[in-house]
Each structure stands twice: as C-alpha cells, then as structure tokens.
Amino acid sequence: KEEVEQHGERKVEDTAKIAIAIEGGGMRGCVAAGMITAFDYLGLKDSIDVIYGSSAGSLVGAYYISGQSTKGLEVYYDVLTTAGKDFIDLQSALRSLGLGMFDLRFKSLAKLFTDRLGNPVLNLDYLLETIAQKVRPLNWTAFWEKQVTNKLPLKIVTSGLLTQESVVLSAK
Image 1: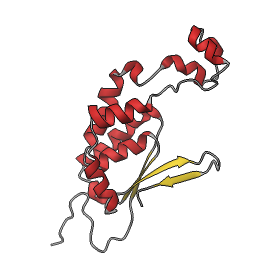
Image 2 (image 1 turned 45 degrees about the horizontal axis):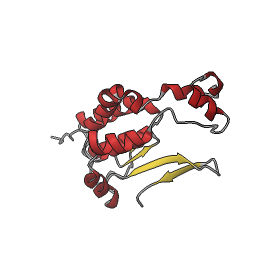
Image 3 (image 1 turned 180 degrees about the vertical axis):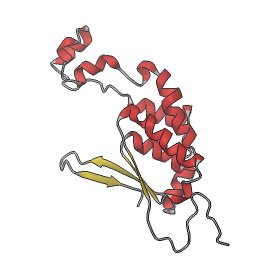
Image 4 (image 1 turned 180 degrees about the horizontal axis):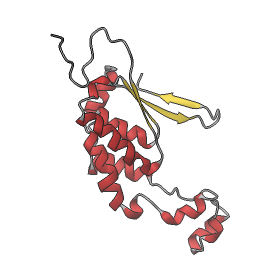
C-alpha cells in the first residue's frame, strides 16, 4: 500500500523549487494577503521555497514568512480600511494625477509652484512604522531567522531609479 503525502510535504528527492510571486499596488495587497493566508489554511507552507514580493506584496510576504499570515490579512481588511487620512490622503490624489491646479486649498495652491510632487497619496510611514511595528507587529525575529537560514527567503522586487530595470533585494 502506497503512503499518501500530506498537503505541503515534500519528498527528500524533490529538487523542484517553488516560488510565490506577490504583486504590489497599494490595496491590492488585500487580495494577495487572502491568497497567501489560504496557503496556510491548506497546509502548503512547507511546499514553498522562496517568496518574491513587490511593494504591498513584500509586506504580505514578510507576515507570511514570520508565521503571521492572518495578521497580514488583518492589516488590509481591518486596520487600513479604518485608518482614514492616516493612510490615504485623497486630497493629494489630484496632484498625483498631475491635476494639482484643481486643488484650491491655499496651502496647496502656494505649493503648486514650489513643490511639484506634493505629498504622496499613501502614507507608507504610517503603514511601516505604526501598523507593522505597533498595531499589528511583525515578528521580526521569526522573519530574520528564515532569511539568515535561507529557509524561506523574501526577495523584494523593485525598480532601479536610474537604470529603470528590475532590482531584486534580499538578505543574502
């Protein structure tokens, strides 16, 4: 009688590498967080060898690697949806679309000619400092252990500012 493998278990002779790519894009991280949490519920965590993440996908991947996929999901469906202006500044949206002249607040009108970019729409400091460190703290110890041992590395995909080419960042 042949022994049936459990979900996520890998045979010793299995040399295939399985990578998960998690997209970025602000609140699209919610979809990615749901997808990666499903891997946990299905018992597939041990079948993944490496995670590639971009922007929001990097944060989702970090929570998953640290064993906190549900906390990563909560960031998107619970915390950010109630953060209001702390996270999303809709008044900066016009400027980010190149329509800053239609934002008639005195402060912004004066800045229109001196500060071409203005404030970003998404406040990443709030996300990374307040949420990932205080509200839904990421377990950095567990995360770095997996990076140092290369057990489940996170590869962050970004763009080179000058080269305009993809750049992959990792702990090693």
